[in-house]
Length: 198
Image (cartoon, rainbow, N blue to C red; front, side):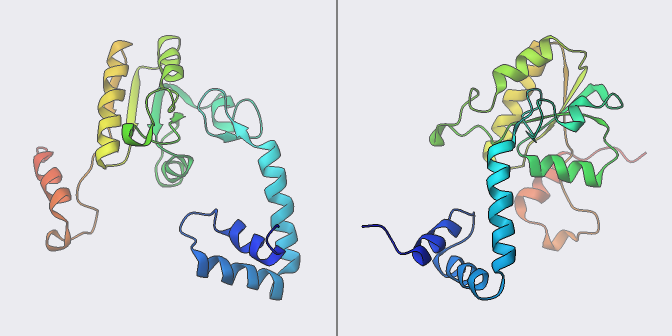
């Protein structure tokens, strides 16, 4: 016997990250009580997105076409390749920096306990790309977590194997931050990575 439609709707909302039973219930009730048109639009766009959005064959970002707009652009610097964990990280860099190179999206990070190894992150494809392109510098922009650091180390070795210079985003204290509020790991890393004042 299948669940009633309302319970199916609540369970469907729970597929989203950070959405528990109560939040899913509120979402379902809101759509049914006040946003039926919005709910229908969401359903339509979600269906189309699942059917038509795949991955760029070059960088692995989400794309409706074989090559995403960034990879297809002739104005991007093809000597620079920035490796990030997720499309959200790529979007943050695009919005906050003047970076005009290309990207490679891992869609995760190395995590052997979760069964995520080099193959799942497309690192074989990244190796082929480094071997057959004009990339001279690979900017490693993984997160400063244990898995992110392990991934960065692996990526640096991969870059060196292909005579590509690996670089890592600077990490440490945020602009405008105060020392007393920095956590121990951030402060230790910032202190250890200090540079000469010009």
